[in-house]
Image 1 (cartoon, helix red, strand yellow):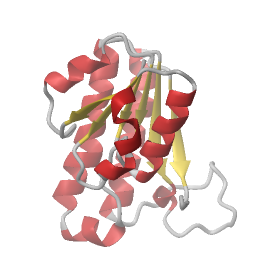
Image 2 (image 1 turned 90 degrees about the vertical axis):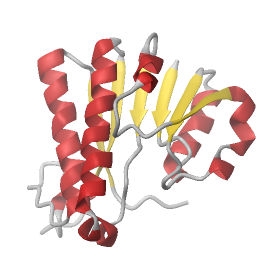
Image 3 (image 1 turned 180 degrees about the vertical axis):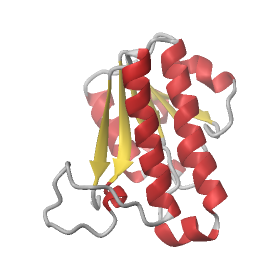
Length: 173
């Protein structure tokens, strides 16, 4: 059983397709703030779709019971809107990640995969950018994704959560 937060987004919907091909039972949690229903129309009969805002704790967290994998892709993205409304980005990207992590901890999820962002590097000094490069988040979006990543790594150490954080660069398709 797998949960994909943000499963109606571009990356999430393709991930859902791949998980279904591998015979996973898939639960999508999405509030459709950036994801689109048409991205998952073709799999609606094969998934459980829960429309919720993960930035607010709630009954949706009970969905994590007996889940093996959580792919946390839900987030607000884009630099300019994050400058204009940093509070929305904080609630979505930091509080949302915290709430998902807490559900994983409560139900002892086997593996947590976090979609971080290369924006944490700011404008890098070196290309290609190495994973070990210093971080310099310059905008609220970058900072909130980096704070989410820090939460994930902290939960790994403190609560023995098996997790990986993927600092994605420009994704296109």
